Amino acid sequence: MSITSAIVLFAVLWFLTFFVVLPIRFQSQAEAGSVVPGTPASAPSTEMVGRKARLTTLITIGLWCVIAGIIVSGWITVQDLDWFHRMGPGGGWYGNQPD
Image (cartoon, rainbow, N blue to C red; front, side, top):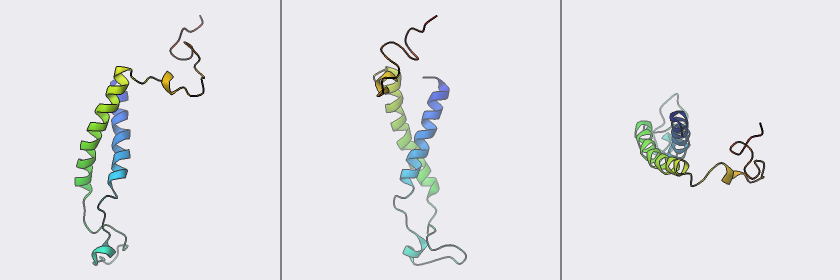
């Protein structure tokens, strides 16, 4: 895995995890009972984006280590994901290419 692939994998995992973590323990202004004038009632009552970003980073580091380890070890390869047999045995991207 190249450094670019590692960074892209981390970024994708980070954003996926971030969107999963965002709604956890969410409390709207309407639920808190104090709606600030000029804001919708569904706006968050407290700012927790920094805390959630840190939590997301910690979770993502663990996920990235596991997934990058699987990719680097070769335990799962691209040919394992060839469900429609388009690469063929020994052919396709990684096999012997005709000259």
